[in-house]
Image (cartoon, rainbow, N blue to C red; front, top):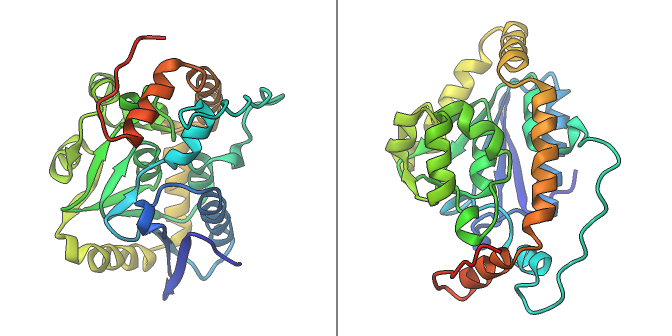
Length: 271
């Protein structure tokens, strides 16, 4: 498979996927998203792979949506906003997003969170089954600071991990938390020195890979069927889609993106 904005390597029976747009702090591109999901689907059916690791290149794990795309959608770049797509005639398909693709993969998936995980990139960081964070990792729901609503699956995963109050606080304020606070909140399993992140993550991955893969797969299925039912995932994805159509047309969304690009504080007007 030819990859764009991604790196892929094997360490024995562990597959490592690296988000590779370090100059853009791994902001999501279409090629990155599609390639990542296709790799997970491919590894799902590869019996020689026991564990998958997802990480990022450079100082960020992932900083969410590319601001250039947001500017075009909202009209913050001065051009007419991109026309809204027609509403889907069906619910989002289970295979359309990382939340479901990762959950449907029976292989254990470990996130090695190497740096900033913000916006939809924070949502992506919550998608692996287990997360190990570098001491340099930082997390934030930054969408509301740009006049947008949380996306990337945050509306579904975050309150189930930290509770409703903390999730809403993070969503409403956009405050950044560090790796130790993420550990306290249960967002990550452990925090390791930045320079040891991949060594520690791979050691943990190989420990899991040496275990009984069928029993591990069944354990994952049982947990996800009860904690993260597919129907709930799809309903959350549908809600995220429709709220996205609404928010893209607001003046606050345009102001939030423009202010970010101009490196100033936004002035929101509630419309």
